[in-house]
Image (cartoon, rainbow, N blue to C red):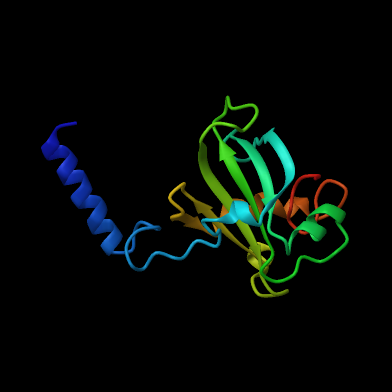
Length: 160
């Protein structure tokens, strides 16, 4: 790509950001629900595995302190604000030790707050902690089948 073409492309992206077309840029960007320092408080609740529903990425599931009991025992309700996230790795990274490609995060809302999204707030976040997508209909459409133990619980799809 030529320098001139690259400059035009950057101008186009900047314009789309200014218009709110692209999520994750500009002053109107929604805040990430995943803290930058998540590793200080989040715990791995499911080890590295391939995910057919996340573009065949390898994923590790981590939970914040509020989500650990509900995710692990499958009987405790997820409290409002509890957060479960997937670190997503390249397809061939079978032990999830390479660079993270992106994050997918779900944060529990109050019961009845957003039934269309299973009372979860969903975000796809890049490695710069910028929100790339929010409440993508694919998330709830896939996770709706994960509501009943032993294979899932309250929209979380996998066994710990």
